[in-house]
Image (tube, rainbow, N blue to C red; front, top):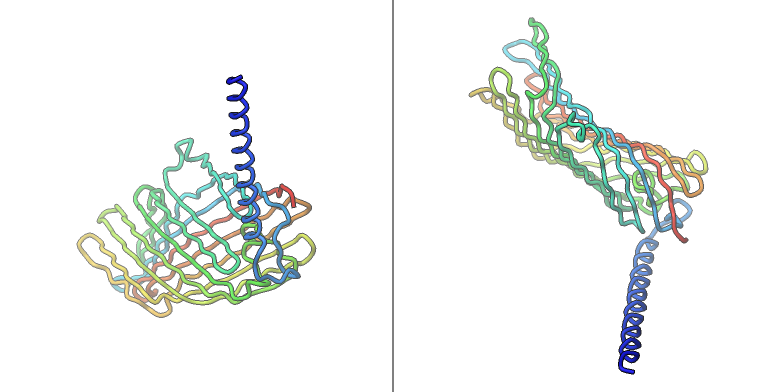
Length: 325
């Protein structure tokens, strides 16, 4: 009798906890769904996907380039250094706007790529940002000096650590959607554009071990405004383009070559420009597309010395939306 009573009590406790856990998860799901669906939007222009789950595969290719140009002792010089391109494959899962993903770099696993890069992107309806940190050791390129033969610069001589940041605010968030182009957490139904407010920053530390050692330190902060436009040429299609030019308001740069300090004075206008583009095609619960982000930073001027930094990223993706409406 005692064993039967004990078993009955144990079964009741387990059943109670199971029902309680189901109620908690159900309430949590309802809360997340309400949060995901709400928002002051014009549904004639943008809507949320009707499903809750999104699975997405991506192929990512990125690169970086540094250019210098100027005049030294009355002679013109120019150099160009480019990092080895990075290719990664990733798989991501999103549930009601919350996402996790895992990436794989085949070249790094095979020992052919030693650089490190971290990219964090967030595309909200009103606010968004890109943060990219790169630690690259495999730059190679060339240097031209007037009256001299071109010098080829091998890799492993230039080591660069760079942090790029761009944050933006969307004024027409009721009708224009950045996420529709870059995260597919919204769907753009009709063409619309928006003025954008932006803040950009770049920090860089570089060392060139070539004849005399050169060291470079740069810190830039800029503000500006731009414009973005989502063009819907037909049902299921989306073309995006945006440009965010920002003017540098804080500039701190130092260059040393051996024991000599090289001036890189502020010269208006110094800018950080972020450009974005995307094309998305969706049908049924599937979508495919490509997106691009490009950063350009200009310091100095060509009459003394100018430094140009370029960072780009291209993604192709395929996704499937799943789950109940």
